[in-house]
Amino acid sequence: MAELTKEQIEDAIKGYIEPALGKDLVQAKAVKGIDIAGDQVKVTIELGFPCDGIKDELAAKIKQAVEGVDGVSAAEVSVGWKVTAHSVQKALKPIDNVKNIIAVASGKGGVGKSTTAVNLALALVAEGAKVGVLDADIYGPSQPRMLGVSGQPESKDGKTLEPMLAHGMQAMSIGFLIDEETPMIWRGPMVTQALEQLLNDTNWDDLDYLVIDLPPGTGDTQLTLAQKVPVSGAVIVTTPQDIALLDARKGFKMFEKVEVPVLGIVENMSIHICSNCGHEEHIFGEGGGNRMAEQYGVDFLGALPLDIRIREETDGGKPTVVAEPDARISQIYREIARKTAGKLSLQAKSYAAKFPNIVIQNN
Image: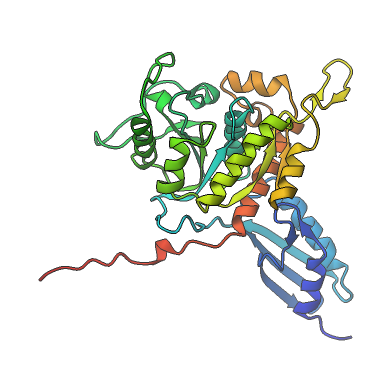
């Protein structure tokens, strides 16, 4: 009988399209090893994004595909992941201890962007990543309430802040530094300076992803983020109605102009399911996020239902992904998180950390 070849095994693996990547594992360069010993095959897969929720299922599917090859009696498949830093805007350098910054934005308020941002961040934690969340909404910080965290951050040296910890995640917000009911009556330059300080003066601890919850719109804060913060990618949150999509398009165009790749679009409040009879209704219209994704050639990351539990749990300081980890809604958030991180893993890598700093000294 003819000997098995790596090409045969690769061809079998190519038959499975990984949902978060939208391509097969060979094409995505995720197959790190194929060892053949007679009729036994061992496959090593390393994804570029955290995948705790699907690694067993993925291993089983690849095992089944490989064992379907003529001449293979048994296959062993190991699945792991490694998050690397990805490239940012040309003039900027990545922040110490933060591999990737993901901005969550919306063109207008009221579309559930902060709720989506915090659940997305917690979903990345659930998938196995080290994650932080930065609340960039200086005028209306909501993350302290959503994470159920109060009190002020520590400063060990009087210059930098220690991030607050909540549900296995690091967090920073202006809301930790002021009273919840104190209004921020500040002009634009003060706001942008505050954002830069919160970002750069926080001792983030070895993060795979820092999720930045942006205020709505395309003003000062967003411009600062685009020009001074090294962002690897952005996620646009919208609702299905035309007015929200109109503003979401502006957000998309803004990121395009400042060379921040948009990883995809999340449609929030997509469908309402009646709690009494289970009837499904598209209150705000249907398919708007999908059409926008198609129009701009970006990924549609997922659709979230209009559900009172999302509101109640997030207002109560225990967002849905933490409050009900096995619920369908939490699974949708985790699918969105894997797709976001998967899409990011396909971007160009950053090699900034590998280059030494050159210092010229006069001796």
